[in-house]
Image (cartoon, rainbow, N blue to C red; front, side, top):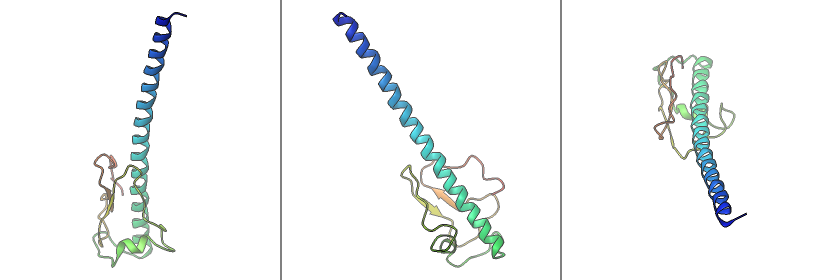
Length: 118
């Protein structure tokens, strides 16, 4: 092999490695977003379950609502974590209206495409 052939092989390998790293980065961002949306959906299901169990209608006030769904012997034992580094904001002490998420993430693209029926 000549020096030119070796240089070409190394350049091609470096190009492939670059593409691999870009692909892995995009995959991680996508999986972080998907997990965040799953967290939002799971909390929403817990909120609706709480409403059904304790006969709380949308728009009604619930004292320390977050503490009613997250804690020891609750729907969740600990606060969910956004793997993308975002922070979650809870909807306060009001049972959310239908099609309104109780939990939101600080990262703008970590938003479900639709919350209709939630």
